[in-house]
Amino acid sequence: MTDRLIIFDTTMRDGEQSPGASMTKAEKIRIAKALERLKVDVIEAGFPIASPGDFEAVQAVARTIKDCTVCGLSRTGDADIDRAYEALKDAPSYRIHTFIATSPIHMVNKLKMAPDEVLEAAIRAVKRARNYTNDVEFSCEDSSRSEFEFLAKVVEAVIAAGATTINLPDTVGYAVPEQYGAFIRRLRETVPNSDKAVFSVHCHNDLGLAVGNSLAAVMNGARQVECTINGLGERAGNASLEELVMAVRTRKDYFPCETRIETTEIMNCSRLVSTITGFPVQPNKAIVGANAFAHESGIHQDGVLKHRETYEIMRAQDVGWNSNRIVLGKLSGRNALRTRLKELGIEFAQEADFIDTFKRFKDLADRKTEIYDEDLQALVSDTEISAANERVQLVAMRVASETGKTPQAELTLAIDGVEHRTASEGDGPVDAAYRAVEALMKSGVRLQLYSVNAITTGTDSQGEVTVRLERAGRIVNGQGADTDIIVASVKAYLNALNKVLYPTPREHPQTGQV
Ligand code: KIV
Ligand code: ZN
Image (cartoon, protein in one colour):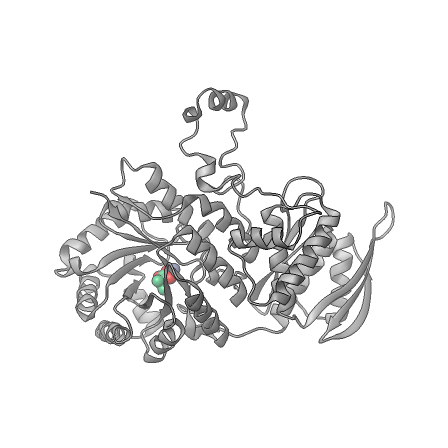
């Protein structure tokens, strides 16, 4: 008998808590649709009480997704739970996920609550959530550093109060596989009503053990794993969805469970999350890294050609490598574009946005003969940025770069619709362009990261630029894509600058910081 392993995706909640990885409503809808095609069981769409924008994004996901349970996070307070319900209530299937920390270090220093108060808050929260739905998840934050007897008491009490999933996070990535697996088993065996709930794990990757710990828990009876695309998440990230799913699938002989994941959608989700958040995937990342299936060395190639299994334990096409390489070009019309976008799960609510994307597509096809799915995703991101009507926008630019001369940039920017010209010199064309922006905006930001990635192969590829800006401790990412990488660089800088200059305040669910 194989059990079902529930895949709970938290890319849009824990993943979004990565500094700079915040997502707009439109981006969340796009990712949610991709996750629906991937057939995850639960999509944690956000923390609705964090801000009005977060609420709207969770609500939009709840109203869009039909084939997955949509989940919202809440602390134990009444207002949090009510807000989560309001955001989720239109989904065909929804879950309220409430949590409180149970470790001494968190209770004393963060919550400033006695264990009995924590227990009471947990029970009350679960009961309140149960008034709204039968699907209630309760998490004991920092469970792996909690005192076992107290933890068991909390788990028993919240199951009695109606929690249907019990999540045991390794919040700070402290656990090691054997110990964590034994911990899950012991808890299931100790708590008298443990058979009334699904046991779930949520592991962070601070010691690089998130996937290993999650799999050890699965071997000890956990039947839900919380994970993220590309392992995105707080600090070193969460357990990576693609690694967990492919481990369980590839080692069916070992793991007594299966998922309903459509693995051929993995690459699509990986690229999309990377494009939207600006967090590139390292080339040697398992499953989704560019080298994951590239058998570079001569010896390996020979082996693979003779007999694939010599060096390959999975097939690249099973995780979606190469499957979405349908090319559009200069002669492709609206229908071809609409059809391919639909196949990628992208449909615009406003026809004007499709027409805008089509114009961008034609413009790109004039400069680049073959248009790949990755190009289309970048075009859609561009449309979403322009539909968001950012307050500072690029109108035109000219950059001069010549051997032996100092690079110069002249830019026209529109600020709230009013055009301004600005110019500067710099160490290179990007530097000159960024200095020109700053000569006008005087934002006081610090550039923490600048990276360019070719979206596809070939010298006509669009360059996808990510910048990370910091001001007064706040970090944001910006993205831009264009066949001209200086233009892409300016787009990315302005995308980030808009977020820094005109922030939408939101509360962090765990630290409470705004
Ligand atoms: O890491 C953690 O403990 C969490 C909880 C809020 C589930 O993300
Ligand atoms: Zn977490």
